[in-house]
Image 1 (cartoon, helix red, strand yellow):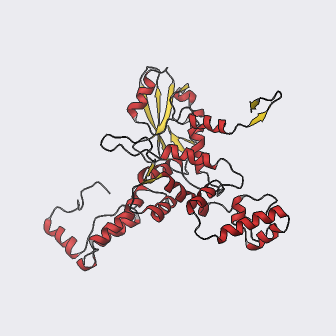
Image 2: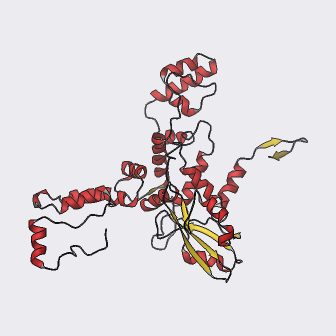
Length: 364
């Protein structure tokens, strides 16, 4: 943890032996060490051998330590420990449902108080979380309402519910009563988080399910956190992801060599932003300078505390790019962002087909 030689203060063996064996001196524990790792180490170097844990206990404890070391955000640890302990890679769909359930728990209240009547046209979410009294009042308003209430009663008392179907339906309703963009939000999250499994023995399965890696999840939380805005208490995590992914200059998880390759044939002043590969939560701006060389500069970032470059603080990367165009000579966003197609598809899926004069279909 410290990358330092332990017990450097001793240069006499006898003094060292007395310090450790008699006076129970132990190496200094860095304050940033995860509590679970600190506790395990302290148990393992207990002066009494009888109090030290067995290897069965140690390996079980290491499953928890692994999550704590990979994920610095507490809510991220909660979702992984509660659903995927002992696993480092899990299918995207499994992750998506577990993460959605977490957001339901920690997000702001989205259901009416028990003494409030349901609205004229309640969402599926509101119906599912309405009290018995609210459902009865709602059902008495009209025959159509009575049918909807009866459907909800049947769902609640149905035996052998298909939990996967339940979660899929909730997925499109947890965020807000009429928020049709929730599936798109998860699609953007999937674009930066999920990956195809690595080929086995040179064979790549085209239909292989995309997977989520424990360590990558931890990094995503640091790049786009916090999950909930500390002031508004709204879930702001997805807003930051979708906002960044639609920027032409953002290229995501890009190696330095590939960034240089993309910029090499472009004009002076061309630039791109990408995830830092060495500093958790930080970003890198790569640009082609006036002498034709390519430089890389770190953008320091800690979730919830802004973005820093050249000792200047910015609220977002978008603001940083806009206000740094002249000082950094940011003239042209580098083509090749892998995320822009998401937004083209999203806009197309929102079009409506209507019947135009003359009987032919017209797209708006």
